[in-house]
Length: 212
Image (tube, rainbow, N blue to C red):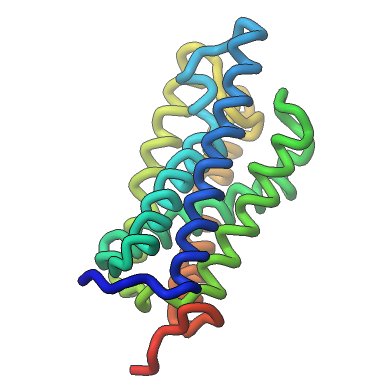
């Protein structure tokens, strides 16, 4: 359904698209630094959950911005996708700032943007802007396939070529440690997603959804 966008919808659309483009630019800059340091393996760079989910979120934000500017209502599957990447970025912020603070080779300002600023902006967008429907609880499971695939690839790489993005996933730490961390990560992702799903029931402050 297409309707002329309101002023608020246009501002939201521009803000989302600009945030998404900025995220892509920051990731491109960080990757360029890795290339300059002769460490530009894309499988390593995008092996980090932060980098791959930030890129996915950026693309979703750009698409959401275009939909807002075009006055089009987002389809249900797209709202679920937005909820998924929002949940992922909350986990990125939590894990980085609690488990592995200050790690990585990127400049500090890049880490601050990727692990604090962008997750906060995306979370506030989801909470305060009401142009999303309540997400069905039966779709909460859709948070899990991507991190399960990511963890599987990481653990295989850790057992073969020795590369892992985060030290707590090192095979040398032993099976019990890996099991605890893997289960813990998946549990945190589900819990984060549940918060996002719950927040989708709020009407928001901007573009408030009508009471049903």
